[in-house]
Amino acid sequence: MEFEDLLRKRRSVRAYLEAPVEDEKIRLILEAAQSAPSAGNLQSYKIVVVNSPEAKEKICHASSEQASIMEAPVCLVFFADQKRSAAKYGEWGATLYCIQDATIAAAYAQLAAANLGLGSVWVGAFEDGEVVEALGAAEGEIPIAIIPIGYPAEEGRQRSRRPGSEVVRES
Ligand SMILES: Cc1cc2nc3c(=O)[nH]c(=O)nc-3n(C[C@H](O)[C@H](O)[C@H](O)COP(=O)(O)O)c2cc1C
Image (cartoon, rainbow, N blue to C red; front, side, top):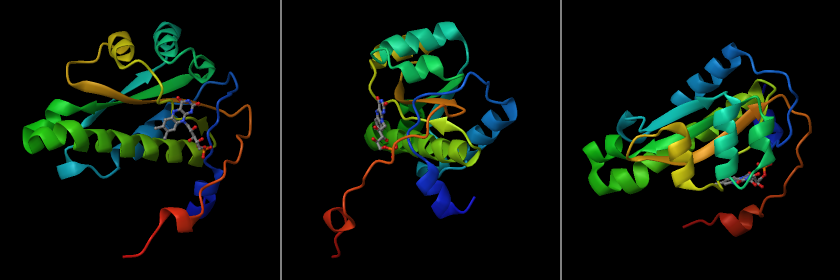
């Protein structure tokens, strides 16, 4: 797919078919996530692939019961790895770089999913502590995004964007 088409095609999709996502596609999505730039190339994030209904139930509960999580055959949960980034960058690593690393990796994963004909949505509204406990994250691993992924059962609404003139300025 042409890059511009991919950018246009990626929309938040919150309803999915029951069909499972092939392991090979998950592998490609994870590979894309890992290809993202990161501070000092430390890749200060962890990715948890959530398949089990029990784990999905827990992270769904942590996210105010957002239906997309239970509906999706698989969810990827991105954690920032504070300790890894802090070891090189101190406070800056712990409070900024690891969060940026995880965020960019998750964004790449969403683009890769769209490129493979899959739908996804960024779920960012959740109770951190509940997600940590549900997935057995270690100390210093902060959940950044839950990304449900599946074959789309809806097209996804095209959301408007602010005009460039409002967002961009020259200096
Ligand atoms: C940081 C962040 C948090 C978000 N949290 C949620 C969420 O909890 N639930 C949800 O359904 N969508 C969530 N979204 C998706 C946005 O609503 C969506 O990206 C936005 O409306 C633009 O639509 P589009 O993705 O189709 O372009 C989140 C997106 C981001 C980047």
